[in-house]
Amino acid sequence: MPKKIIKADGAAPPGGPYSHAVVAGDFAFLAGACPVLPDGTWVKGAFAEQARAAFANLAEVARACGGDLSRAVRVGVYLRDFADFAAMNEIYVEFFGTENLPARTTLPVALNGFDIELDAVIYLGD
Image (cartoon, rainbow, N blue to C red; front, side, top):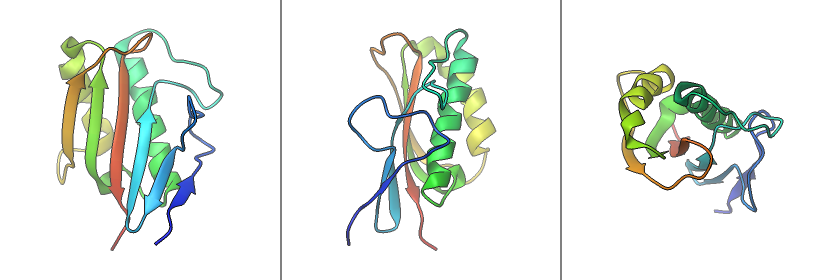
């Protein structure tokens, strides 16, 4: 089955030579979503503002794939400062709820100039 490249017009533009997402079979593989507005402007400031922008980008890419975040089967969360873990969890439930949650990995990483990045795998099947 051929892969389908997804470009989400309502999400921030990719920050490099990659696609917003790739659909292969019943799954959509969403690239890293950062705190960037659709016009390419980086969201600076408080962690919560950055996190909501990154989650909004991820949600927009999921919609462009024909799904939504409720269909996520795996989420990756990458934090510049692991002290933001509790705040991230509070914002996470705004986008994913509290039931039927995807598997998730949260890692501290050396992000340069921003506080959070997210990726996901979405199941698009019945």
